Image 1 (cartoon, rainbow, N blue to C red):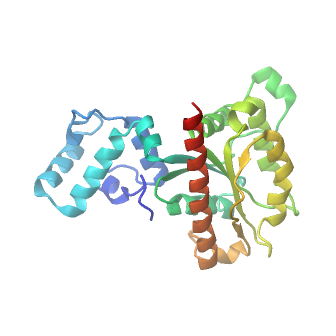
Image 2: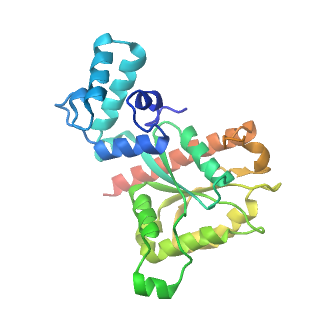
Length: 277
């Protein structure tokens, strides 16, 4: 696993806290920034046993725990400005499939785990997004699930679309989600937003046709599309194990190269924006 914010699985487990990537990211985001004047063990969000565990491990000076505790303390004290100055970038990986055991959702989680140093990936799906209906929009406004996705994208520095391929084209459920988001605020969500696209399918050509079919829509939305590498996981039923882990070495190599390139791409855009201010 790369050296990013998701290195705290064992520590969170010992503290009795949820230790999935998403739970760790949410915890750090919720409690950041911690005052520099406060010891980590004295933070108000710990219960008595959690605070005692942190104090004891620091006093014991056991390297396997003190290093993790110090790293968590550092992560909790970082402000948004500090993260930006260090080049950290937040990416929302949006899966275009609703299936529980979706290969594309699994690919999004593989990207999350393999994220290079300086990149933090959050995974989202389209669950809860209704079919687009202008009458529904008029009578009830933008659905809550769409507004949640909008907020997640606006919080991120970049969008990573993880697309299936249906009948050699764009999946309807994914296009529907993007159409709803365009109604929520197309310019704020998409205009010049660094955007990547990867995908997995059970066919022999990966998601080549689907990714190509997305291009006119993405051009109209005005995203800044990364095209330096590609991830087209073919024969996905053989590329993932029963637990949804990406085990195919060629696919892992391609994904790793893609994420490295995408990270550099997003960081360069961030630097350009800072210089233009």
